[in-house]
Image (cartoon, rainbow, N blue to C red; front, side):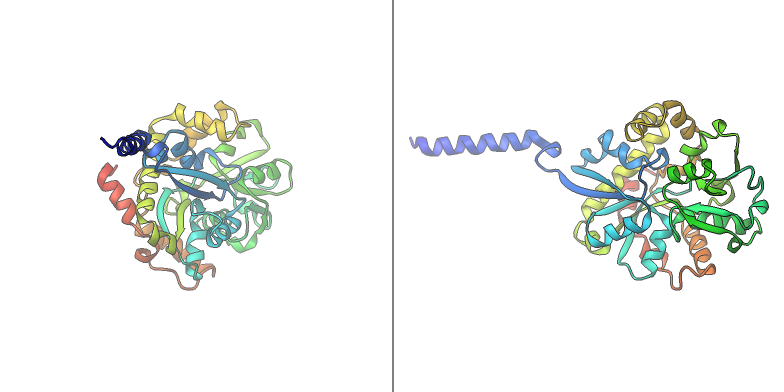
Length: 333
């Protein structure tokens, strides 16, 4: 008997057993760098963090690392340069405009199909939108979704958005701090900041944005076309994990607050719980998509205000293969 061959076979068998037992949690994990435009994040953008903490990514063999950027501009640059593989919390208007200007990127999932915004202002500056004419409005950056949202709200209320001063300040948390400090007159903040307004009587909540403009999506998952072509199966797994995470969030307030506390240690559970309750039920994209009508409304506004000249057709902008496959398997809600 050839003991050398028996020994080799035993080694190969042992290796095969180890690999089989390892599963996607160890041997077959695909590493992905995923970007977000929010730093710090908010409970309204907690989806990818839930997918990490609750194992939705891991279930599909994905080892996702979150990289946070301050605003859409730096986030988009990171995506185009290859610093990150995919984005998940990109402002919807930023994604649409970037693609229209020639960036070879496409939408692969919609984690938040409506906004979590509240148009807030200092009482001394004005308690109505009309009273704010000529005043300063803080945004994360000129051209970001936090820049377009107040303009859309103002226009829908019959007020010329050009009669305001837009100041780049940063994240929703940064803008809220500037508002409280009296450095700016108004801004749009997320539910996380709006949940604290009872403690700031000098701040008034003028508009719950998704009730006024429900057509505008909040955040997109974007990826370079080259990456999509080479990693179609990975994008499908990512989309499915994001959808499952959103469905879990929609049904698990306490668990969502628990995850949010880990990424927002300075926020109390009470504040985060209130923010969760304030969120529009449609915020969590349980099907990972938007309608063509919502896309068209957003595009038409961007065209009207001169921020875009030639939009990418909806069917070309949104690569629905991954969402459609995931929803077919999970069932539509």
